[in-house]
Length: 190
Image (tube, rainbow, N blue to C red; front, side):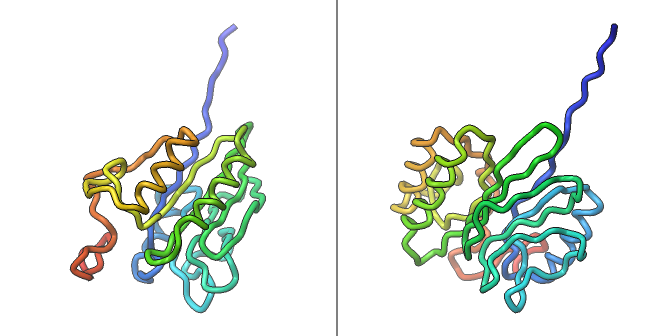
């Protein structure tokens, strides 16, 4: 008797769009066109994630959110675990799979240790589950980029090593902000 095997495909993207409404409008169209299931770090206007269809589920803090998760696939069961201004964690059930998705944004001039402590707690509390962390840590390290190791990068690297995490990043991709102050988005420098 032949058996059929099938696998579920989960498509997600991490983009830092908090400052770019124009890109976010395009992204809403791309989510539908490319069948993305979720996106994080969306554009925020007047404390709300905007520019997405109403049927997309949006998880974010209700006051000046810095992180968020948008789920476009209505077939997934989604349970919020933590909704904070710069860290959002949800549990998603699709098929027989259970994932914990975490979106984190660390302010460049804030103490990163507080954010990493919350992230560490989420990892420990969900250690038996598959966890995907989408983050903008505003930290430099050769582990995820070409630049040197800063103090913030060392702290994030310690979290990575201590929790046996796997980094998925293209080290050739440019940072979202150049040090000269010019912002880079997917349409070029603005």
